Every structure is written in C-alpha cells, then in structure tokens.
Figure 1 (cartoon, rainbow, N blue to C red):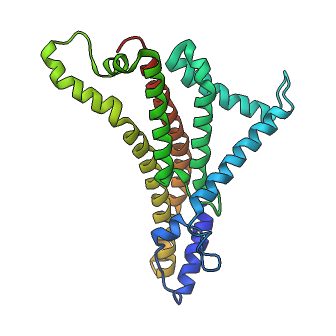
Figure 2 (cartoon, rainbow, N blue to C red; figure 1 turned 30 degrees about the horizontal axis):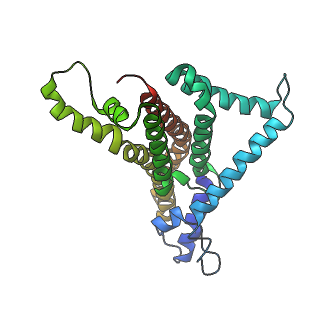
Figure 3 (tube, rainbow, N blue to C red; figure 1 turned 180 degrees about the horizontal axis):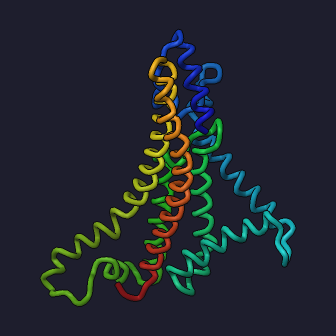
Length: 270
C-alpha cells in the first residue's frame, strides 16, 4: 500500500515540475481519473464494496465446495472464521440463543473486516467503511433488527419499559433516568456505532497517507531531507501494520456490540 501511494505522490511531484505537491483528499479517497473521470473517480467506494462482496462469496463457495471431515486449507479458514464469531461472540454474549444468530453475526464480521482491509490492498487503498454511508447503513440495520426482535418478543410498551426502566431505584429518579435511558438505548446507539467505525478507519487511512506524503516531501527537499526521510518512511510502514490490527479490531467491536444489543433486546429483565 505505502509503495503504491509513494509512487502516486512521486507522479504528482513530477507533474508539478519536480516540486512536491501534497495529495488532496480527493486523491486519497477516489480513483485517479480515467478519461474525464466522471464514472470511475466518483464510484470508488461502491466498486470496492462490490468487489468485497464478490470476494467473500467466492471464498466461502470455494471453502464449502469440497467439505470434508478432515478440512483443507480453505475449509479450515472458513470454519475458523465462523467458529471464532459463533463461539467468541454469539454464544459468549447471548448464551444458547446465540447459535441462531451466529450466521448473521459471522456475516457481519467478515463483511466489515473485508471492507476495512481494502485499505491495505494496492490500487484500492481505501477502507470502504471510511465512506460514512456504509457504517450508517450497517448501524441502521442493527438498530432496526434489535428493536424489531425486542418489540416482537416483549410488545412495544414492554420493550420500551425493558430499555428505559431500571428496577430498584427510587421512583423520583425515574424522572431523570427514563429519558437518559431512552436517549442512550433507543436513539443514540446507531449514531455511536456508525461514528466509531467511520472515525477509526478514516483517521487511520489519513495517518498512513500523511506519513507517506512526509516521506516524499523530505526526499524532494534534498539536503537534510535525505537523512530525515527514513523517519516518516518507517512510520508509514509501522502504521500499515497498525492499521491491520485496527481493521480487525473495529470489525470485532462492531460485531460484539451488535450481539450485546440483540441480547439486551431479548433479555427478560434490564
């Protein structure tokens, strides 16, 4: 990823008569224009989203094609991913009822993970979840789902009581607590879900880009820059490995919170 970004920055510098030109936000989040750039440049996130979905489907079709008691490498990887979410998230958080939610949660985790990892794929170089519409869509989906199953089980008023009424506190405290619980559990959850994923992926992507741009700037400056370029260069490499951790962690956190919200909606008490 860093090498490709450095190459693009070098091309920008060459076009600017040898001087350094920092990449624009458009350059970081859109494909380089092809022709007039009206299609490819404006559809990068959607193109990568489609590629990610196709890649996920192809991987699991290939993993399941020759399923055997003694799994091959692809089957082992597919079962490992599913088993991690089923045992480590669904059952761990939701108990026995987590088994029926494991396929959904595993799909959610793998989908977000692949979209995050697009940041580290050469040429793509964009975490699709840094496009705010994608985290918003996922967060609204989770919001509709956990509220829907909660209302289906408890009824509308029973569900609202479950989410907003805290037993065992003085009655006058409910005047303050019920609005706070309603705001927190019903209204703000999709917002915080979306912003957490978006902000982490957007910030990480920009940090890697800034470090790579600093490397090119020092190389173009000459003189002491030749000795100092190694610092941002090394930082950009380390940030790529750090982003690998962030991509995985954010997919896990989003899936874990989805499981927690589902468990809370299906619980019999607050």
